[in-house]
Length: 388
Image 1 (cartoon, rainbow, N blue to C red):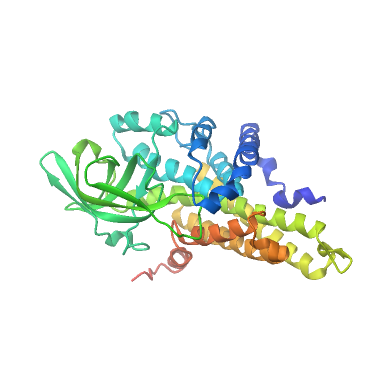
Image 2: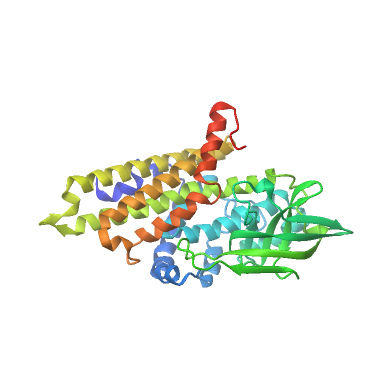
């Protein structure tokens, strides 16, 4: 078994259809040719290359798993493969695609009226309109049901007040999907970001997901018509279903990030000589690589099986929680171990490892913290909720 088999140790890609293999290869070329030459500079500057958005859209990646309205209608496994290849490049790249498709387009596709779908989805699939997802608040992260953002009815309009924080694409988005308390419970709204009273600010000085725009936005008597409310979104089921879609992408994306670190560590270890031989020949280095290989192969198995369950209509939220919890932890442990193999060079953006390592610190937290997913699994095992 040659060294090139490290990132597909159990030959799981043999399970892919011809269309899925073509998608994999196309995205991999895009990442290698267009993304990798510029990612270190954008990570260093804290920017996202907006000039690549049309190419990302041309690849059919925005809303890739949705049917109709200009979307690709790809399989769950194809969506996962796309996320894996994108996050092999950077978590910020996969986050951009995930937020657009799973957190912004999906709620319109799932809970919107036909008029809303026709109005927004084709332009979002084409990358002409960028979205952001407003759920998390400054004081309400893991407990979004306690959000304080409110929407009140005023004639044929709604007036929104509140604040959302840690919002990917806030500041570059043309539209926000905003979740707010109403007298009838939590509802979802489509809010164009040029609406009077809407203000977005970029969060500066963050040390993770730097090649991704993260911000906050404020709603000060933002008035929108009833036609901008998502009619079928009722209660927390609405935003949580969106999060499940995004978490599914993370399950696969974490595999890409971890595999990138594994490959970098293997390549470095075979070329770096100390004490007269490559450090790949030392037992401690081999033990590290063996552990990393095992962890990431296990993560790949969870991702592939989760995709199969999703396509069979048998994927439950607890399945997604297990895979998200396991795969991100496996990836972050792999990244940290890879950094030790690269030594001091491991903290340089000349190599991908430190970039993935610090990105995964955010991935561990967003779309449900490791602790929350642990409690989801605990409740599944016992039937007893431990959140309160």
